Image (cartoon, rainbow over all chains, first blue to last red; front, side):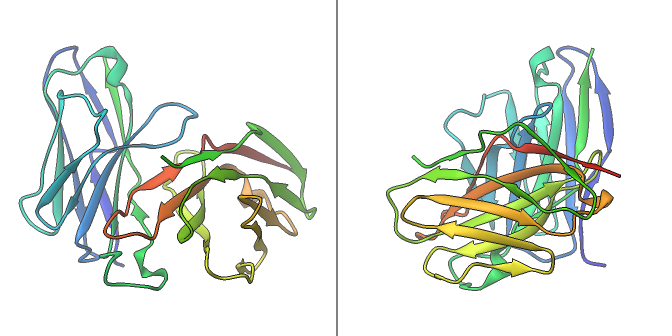
Length: 118
Length: 116
């Protein structure tokens, strides 16, 4: 089945130790998103890729970076994790909302990676 | 900037009964999309239902339907014949229809519990 896959599902890192979370998709969607979701809160968009074009949210800390080497994969790099970065990180994908006028611009979410910072 | 408000943090419903989850939003745009997403405990977020603002007819998907009041900027979700599997966190979300801005703005969510 076409889907959005996130690895690992659980990640433990130490304060200040860089960590990379990965997302892959078999949907061939050209837009990929990274969200941060803290306990019982709404997902907060960090950034998204529109094909290879990177779009950073204004309030995303510089500590968070992203890479998208190809259509299928997208990575979230946290350069120096702090205790406040402990959260669930969600990856999502969608097709080009400009080209489509029907329901196919829906965002499809992966299962998330829960990050613990010790 | 658009905002989405879900004022009820928690709700509970008896199995087989009907429950309505409320959502209001604020926008100056005339064309946009509204969504309800479901996030079960420890499971991924999935789309429940979607509404285009230019459509007057309320969207329905099996046991799920919405009451979209554009003038009041209200978008409530009705779940009929509630099932145990409906227990989850539900998020209301907004997306502009303008240009290539595909960003979703989420409400804070509501935790729905279903009593057997």
